[in-house]
Length: 381
Image (cartoon, rainbow, N blue to C red; front, side, top):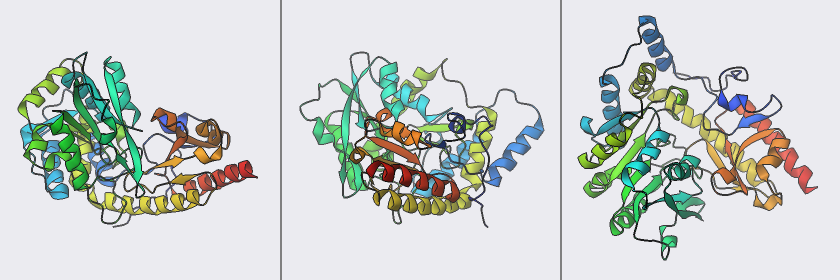
């Protein structure tokens, strides 16, 4: 079975947030969606559902439930019980719900920095304080340094928000690192929200994703795991995700916080998610191979340029590039002037970085590398 990830699909005049942000002179390589056509199993499932012609309220998604349980067991050896599942219209809503459900007005959450912006916005929108634990570069991997919080903890922390694989750094946490995070949560009696949306986009040979909740029974009972096929299968616009919550009390609190506010997942999103997790594995494996080649090409090129450096991400299709050596005040603006639309590092907490989305065709990536090289070399001349 072959898949064509080199297919160039014009998204300029579609409903794409990614491609409508800039004019046609700028290559958009920012928000985390890819430029690849989804696998046929998803398109065909949607076509069958649309042909039915009736789109009333959907019942409990038993098909997606079965696909989720099967996916978790065969991919991670995780036997998930059906009652643990809470289906959601997106992981971002779940991040916000976790802050509201598991902290009070005078309590704090802990999150890594740099981090995917909704982690920090979730606290701000709930009018809560948040303590930030820095990521440090260790052996070319961005890892969270919870020890740096010593002396800053107030005793009012209630929620530890983790991201694995890490966004924007691309780290796949090892079991011993996750156990250290669990020990920290135990010591400070924290509930753990683990965003694992990128867990199937593994690029590093030998890397293996370990869901936080699978560490042991204690980890399961104090955690909420957030998963979705949206990033892996490029269906973010169809909004379907799941919160996996083994602890019935935590599940009750989470469900209470969403009642009357968070809508049910729409029927087409349920259809697409089920098809992805039921039949999409061959396409996903081929996509990861393609992304790995893109990653290697981009990282080799970036690290050959003066003033830039990047630790190759172990997962995701996002490269976290340190541009502090360029000597420009605003790297994202500098690259934008060169026709490159990167995510500003300041949105993640590090203004001298940019995040580059390499989930594109090899031809688009080559054009981006050419523009990047010209911009940096002109600056250095």
